Image 1 (cartoon, rainbow, N blue to C red):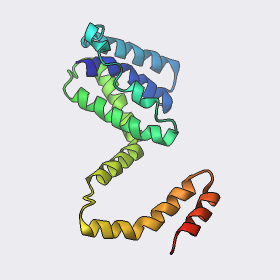
Image 2 (image 1 turned 120 degrees about the vertical axis):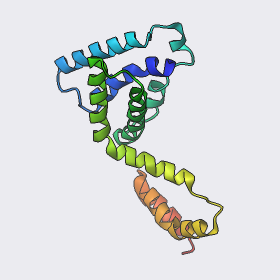
Image 3 (image 1 turned 180 degrees about the vertical axis):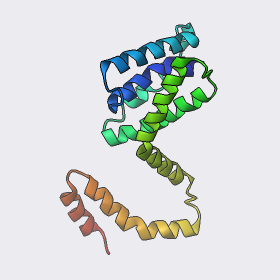
Image 4 (image 1 turned 45 degrees about the vertical axis):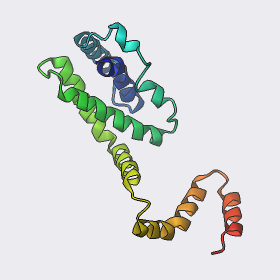
Length: 165
């Protein structure tokens, strides 16, 4: 229950961050709906504070906008999963769920990136065929890594001196 109650405020942070709260009235309505949801889940219960925040603390280490889209897409997915088991007969629950679905659609690139990361963790790096493919791609990966750094000219020249290609 702590997962469900403590993390509700992150929804408003997500919506504001990505411009889905168009005006003050919508933001006030959303806050009102979240307050009702907090009451539904009895989020003032003492166990909510146990263990600290579940989402907001993780958001602080994701600083770039594109990075945030990845983690936020996962957080929105978790909220949607939570709402699967929530009574949708209440209008405030429906309103928040609809907003979450809208956000999920706008963060689809983050979801794709998260799936890519999950796929990477599933690679069997002990498999000889996978190892061969990885070795064939190594130089290209290192080049892309060099291109993303601020001092890529210096790193590229260092790499070219080290590489016996």
